[in-house]
Amino acid sequence: MKFGSIPNPQDVDFTLPADHPQTEVVLNSYKDDNIPEIYVGCAKWNKADLKGFYPRGTKDELEYYSRQFNSIELNATFYRIFPPEQFEKWRKKVPEGFKFFPKLNQEISHWKRLKDAQAVVENYLYSAVNLKEKLGTIFLQMHSNFAPKDFDRVVNFVENWPKEIQLAMEFRHTNWYNDPKVSEELYHLLESNNVSNVIVDTAGRRDLMHMRLTNATAFVRYVGANHESDYSRLDTWVERLKTWKKQGIKEIGFFVHQNIEKESPLLSAYFIKKLNENLESDLRIPNEEHQSKLL
Image (tube, rainbow, N blue to C red):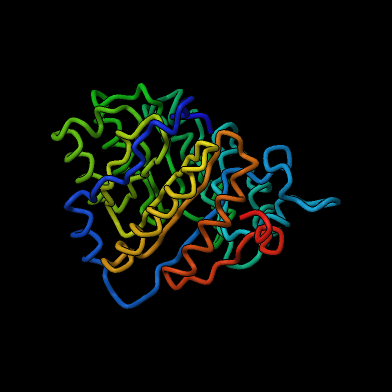
C-alpha cells in the first residue's frame, strides 16, 4: 500500500491526535461488560508479497495464513468481482472464527463514483454473502479526488445500503475532515446508519486521523513506513484501543500494511502480542516460534 508514503518518515510527528469529543459519547452508548472482538490481519495472503512468512513447501497460502491470523483485509475484490463460488471456496478453507473484510469494487467507488451504482453493489453482494458467518465488515474506499460536492451521492449510497451487512467508509479528500460543517454532516449520516468511519494511519496524510468513531466498531488501516517508528506507533495504538475498550467499543478491525509488504506479518505479530498483554485478548501470535527470534 503506497498511499501516503513519503521518503522521510523520521521527520513525521506520529502522535495520535486526541479523540473527537463525540467518540466517547458514541462508545458509551454501547458500553457493557463484554470483551470486544478483535481482528488483526494483513491486506494480502499471497506468497509473492509476504516473502519469508510461509514455510517452505506451503501449498495453500490462504489455508496457512488463516491458521496464523484471524482475519484478512480482502483487497482483491477491489479489482474484480469474484463469482459466488470463489467466495464459497475461500470460506471453506479458513477455520471457524476467521473473517474476511472485503473492499468494495472499484467500479462502485472510482468509476461510477457512487452514481447509479446500485446494480453493481447488488451483484457484488450477491457473491460476497457466500462468505456467510466469515464475512466481516465490507469497506468502501473513495478516490482522493472525490470531494464533498458529491455529498448527495454518499447520502443515497448509505441510506440504500442493506442494514444487515456491516459497512465501513473511507474518504481521502481532505475537505471531508477539515471543513467542520461537512465533517459533522458526514459523521451524523454514518452514525445514524450504523456505518463505521475508517481511520487511515499513514505517514503522508495525517489529516485522515480524524479519530471520530461513528459506531461501536473501530476500522483502522495502518500503513507502516518500513521504519523503526512503525513499532512505537503501534504502541500508541494499543494505548488508544485500551481507552476505547473502557469506553465501550465492541469490535476492532486493525489491518497492517507496509510499503514493502513482507514486513507486515512482523508488525502484526508485535501488535498482537501487545494487544494480548494489554487488552485481555487471546489472539494467536503469527509464526510465534519464528517471530520470537525476530522481534
